[in-house]
Image (cartoon, rainbow, N blue to C red; front, side):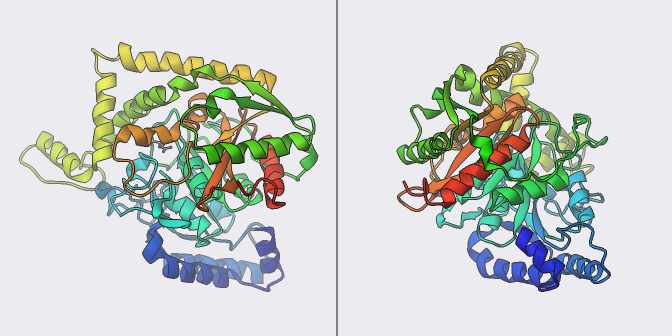
Length: 476
Ligand code: GLN
């Protein structure tokens, strides 16, 4: 992005030209990809024109003023439809901006459009969208991952330079891994969720996707920092873009959890990640085998909590205040009919599961039990970070799967096997490409950092990116 910023600065390119380039690329690739739910051509061009005027007057809002982005469609944009990929909200237009949107606008970034996702961010493939599936740019017969599939595909296909997504159990990292881009799930509390439609507030984070580590860091620097409108937003300061220092790897203690390299892990993925680990060791990192024994329970715990919280959060969609309404003789029938017509299968399944685990007779056995296990998972992660600086794992057990391949929801849930732990424990984690498999599909490597350890995670990611770029580790 620095190059683009320089070109803007020296007036060799205008924001309008960049945005037009994005719109052309979208027109060319969208018929296959379907990464967007809404493309805001008019709005983006108007914002670009404003950016160009600011440049001409010598008053850019930031070095990135005029560089466009795409925003996942569960993040509120004032005056621009925000559907959460649900039938329920297909005509809903917010009257306010999410804090992250406010911040990118404050930096002068035009919003090209809103990207596709699994309905209400529930899923791992973007197949559960009411607006059709997003295809993987590397193979359109395969999924882009999810739930931020549109945000990842749009960046991978060069429709936009960068994008925003949300991650509750892996929804930025898994699609980033499938599409071969970089995706960051920040530490819990580091980025405001105000205006991001809640899936599970104890797990949700907004994060960034880009083709390069540095760009993901730059975009993160624009959105990070405290916000009084998000009650769990931590008082942590903003985030300055790191000054790259690849010597950071020397003496770095890298935890390698054995549980993340066991059965279910695709051989080619394992090989690529191990090669990247070996590269880190060659540069002076100390690889330390560690154990996160409770990871075995991460999916069950995650699902219990995510469904419980979702069932409660989605109660607000009742046909009265937002979106779809099916008229009926009395209020209760109207609620039921509106919800019945507005929500898709996966959303209904999760509302039912969540209601069940929260019901008086099952609360203790499921919800309360899951909270206890969550504490054990947090303790495991905290213990690991006493011994190591970062933890490195595969992002996903496999590369991108075929559209329609995972018919059983339980199989789909297993996509989050390596990602949910970071959400449950609140630490930060990033996925970056570390090679391709024999079919040319990208393989993702996950770097997990401690609470508010984004700087180190980016530094390590940058070092890995450089060594992959040098050709070591890129071929399996
Ligand atoms: N795949 C996970 C799920 O289905 C993650 C969702 C998310 O992070 N938003 O719940």
